[in-house]
Image (cartoon, rainbow, N blue to C red; front, side, top):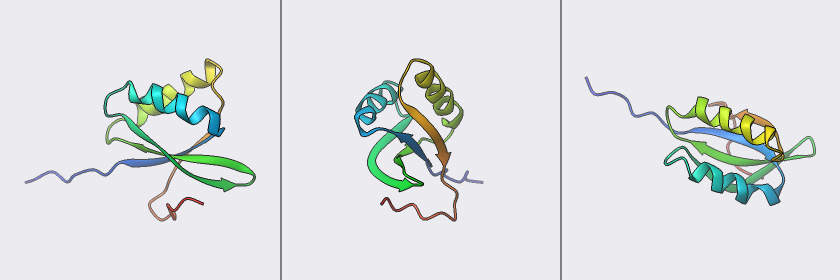
Length: 90
């Protein structure tokens, strides 16, 4: 039996635009963990940037966002996109 290919998980990270480049640089150091996009959406007055997480890397990503918060990086909510959610930015 051929195993099914897992899709990347999509997360939306509440942060400031000025922090996106720093977060991207940190995540890029972890080869293949994540792809930070400049796609964003606004919900309840908060700006969320889209991040694709490689299969099997969700726990590491969440741990890393927690560590970044502790180091002073401006990261608010980190929300996982649900399968039935509209993933379009805006």
